[in-house]
Length: 267
Image (cartoon, rainbow, N blue to C red; front, top):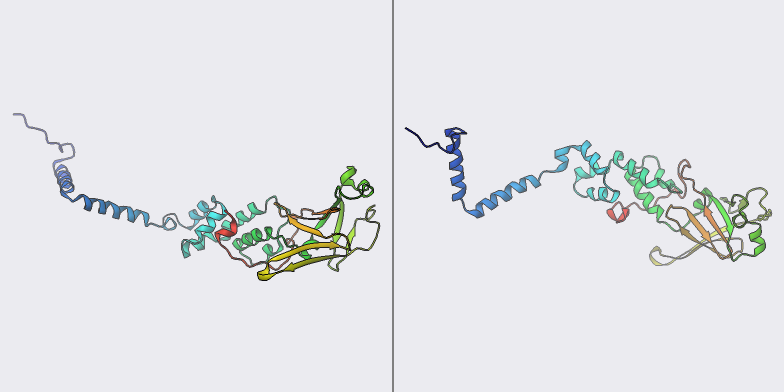
């Protein structure tokens, strides 16, 4: 006598019965209840903190592949995330990336005991600084050349225009004096002094800022993308010589107010 094979015979009779009963219950349940149950399951999955799942070391590895602004955003997630995202291990490499190819490294970012996150933030803000200080003038060596508007006699003595050798160099000193290399034909051994003039209006906004050599026309100051300085007027131009390898950095020691936020690191 032939018997009809039950659909759960492959899995076993008891297992098949349980499966059919579960399917029947699901069919009888209200669709809204099913959606709510699925939503609760999704919430349980989403609620798991990646830091708890992967651990501190792996999260540092993950964050190290993000750009600085994204890492800065992760500082705001929680106290635990802040502890991971602010680690020196993570920001040391970010600082090296930031400083690569820069003409000058801010002295304020090299202070002993400073966290790498703070060093990065200070470096970014200092790189945007356009107000030159006496420390900047004295710390750097400056290349000097005449502009096209200068008298032809001066330009004929200038290697920049003649292409006869390296550019002339100038040196600023803390006592307010300026000197040149021995044998500089343009310099001529005359006495020279400089002054930095800054006029500030309400809320610290700079109205005018310039550097003047003796009584020559004022030189207006600008900053290049590699953080080098440039000072120029209608007659001549000064450009700071890169010295990123200078131990302890350059520029003023007093750091600007460090407000570590995603806006600090740009868009």
